[in-house]
Length: 489
Image (cartoon, rainbow, N blue to C red):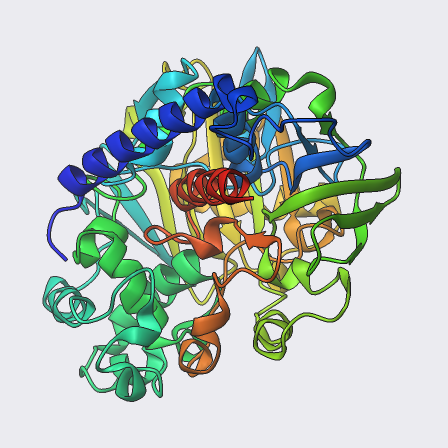
């Protein structure tokens, strides 16, 4: 695919031009030049132009674009009592936060970076200077991975080469789709003569990117993810110069919070949509816990599997309904944060990163604030191997950190444990663990509109699907689709 920075700049310029055109059409709509945005005559009472379902990055970006284009006839409906979707900040004290959901951006993720600049949200680099600790049983090894996860570069290069034939936005259209979609990443790795001691690294890498072990991750889908990263596996699966390189000052949820503040009463929280009727007619009715909402267009900015929990009347087309039913609906993550008075491990030449062989920690890392005012170690853990009781889990994790960093780790200030599988009924999965065969069977239905329903959310993005950047891109795209639809009305 090559470098994607220049195309992104071109796309952003086109988007801004289209939004300006749409905004201009609002001003002249009463003269008959833009009837979709400013309707001549008496409008239908109680009917909005657009209803947006979901107040994560995708839905809020779409709402922000609509307002910038001059459209005020919309509402955002969010089932949770907060905004941010799968981004969530945790207050660790002293005015600092730690993210318990999505948190990083990296090279090529220009959509979310542009949004942060527009919202005046600063960034800072992830901390990786020093040695990473590898734990195995009672064994401990400290090694400088130089900002990587220690993956075999030769095998990574083979994946990079394969990804050039798999378009990120439509992997099912690859000429090699039939061949590649039969395999899991585990199947492919088994053919690469990987040493047993290196398999732990690959297990952690794939699990962190896709939510499952390599045996359950579709190779075609994994290659499409690498394609998003300029066809460079190391840009996807590292820290330095990669997708885990940069963090947001104030935590990733601050992006959604700032967009939400500007919406005022156009945002309705604790307002789940239970049923959508007449989506194939001019006016769509949404049945929510706070009453009915009627709109001409609906942006579905929620996870595909969550869409399957909404009742549609009439039923959705068979292919779309099949995609929603088949979409992996349970790949939750459990993410912990251990807070210390200071990042003491840095004094020992350690970067705070841990990989554990056959243990509960997939990856632990330094998640301290920009100036290191306090020390925070976050970790992605295997749910079944860590006690569910909060106090027991804190002691359990502190003992592992003591093995890695020393006895200072036994005296944390606080501990936070967030299990996305139990957090709320609206986050049924964090990342999409797409299995082999899925895209070949269901890919064509991913973005195809159904009547006046427009599908959005990070899973629908052309590049960086599954990431915060993909969510922002999908929000921009949905806003453009609906504005064009209004102008054609």
